[in-house]
Length: 145
Image (cartoon, rainbow, N blue to C red; front, side):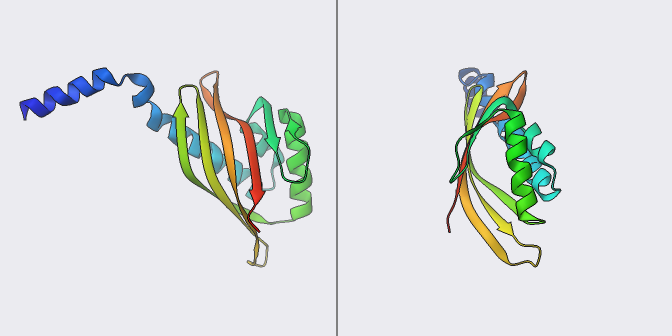
C-alpha cells in the first residue's frame, strides 16, 4: 500500500498541471459545444456566435470561409432563417488538449420540425483559451449525406 501511494505521488509530480487540467478543459469544451447546440435549437445566432473567439474562422461546405464573430453570427442567422425550426444534436467523439489549444472531433444530426431526419455529418473544431476561457477558434463541418 505504501509503495502504491509513493507511485501515485511520483506520477503527480511527473505530470503537472497541464495534464491534470485536461479534464477541466474537456468539460469546458463540451459545455461550449452544448451552448452552441442550445443556441441553434433556440434559434439564437447571437448565442452561437458567443461561443466563438472574436477572430474565429468557420469553414462551411459550399461556401467561402467566414471570419470574425460578427460575420459568423450573420452566417448562422441566415442558416437559422432557412432551417425554420430544425433542431440539431451535437456529439463530441474526441477532445485532444494541447496546452492552450484543443481539437474536438464530433458529429451532428439535424431533425426537421415533423421529427424526420434532415441531415447528419461530422466536424473538427479547434478551441483556444482566450483570457482563461475556452473559445471556438476554427470550425470545419460537412454533411455525410
